[in-house]
Length: 224
Image (tube, rainbow, N blue to C red):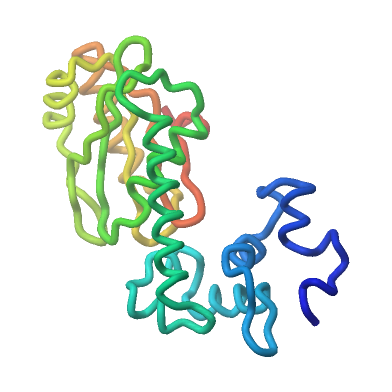
């Protein structure tokens, strides 16, 4: 059955207009992007098959051009559109966390850090340096690790924080496994960094662990 024949409340575009984008599933959002299906499959059916074929949204969005264009119902035009959408999303998030901006929303900060780190295939440890009014000074990746972890050196973090004349910072790193749950090692290095930075009067406001579908805030978990 064509989507046009569905009840209005079940059609992705009408559902988005009525309830907002957050009310839609990943499959429904992808179906809106695809716009049309293929013979015998609606856009929703095709979206569901693509997510299953690629193993999830991240894998689909990060597929190389050849693999993406060979996908059922996809092609060069869709690849170009998707890359444009992804870049617009990155630039929107960059605009919310530009140098000199005051951090207004913990959610926006997490989105920004997720956009920066989620695509990395190896672990990356970074800092978002802030002044005493929580205005952004700089985002800086500091350590690059293997698939299993990164060696984080407190002395180097302190050195970069002093270089930026930061009064506070937010730590962040990704879990290439896709699971954002903090490990014991994550908690131990957070404590070491917090203690080292406190010696030079620099506060650690949060530590964000980035996974595939979500990020975890140490501050929200009461781990700082």
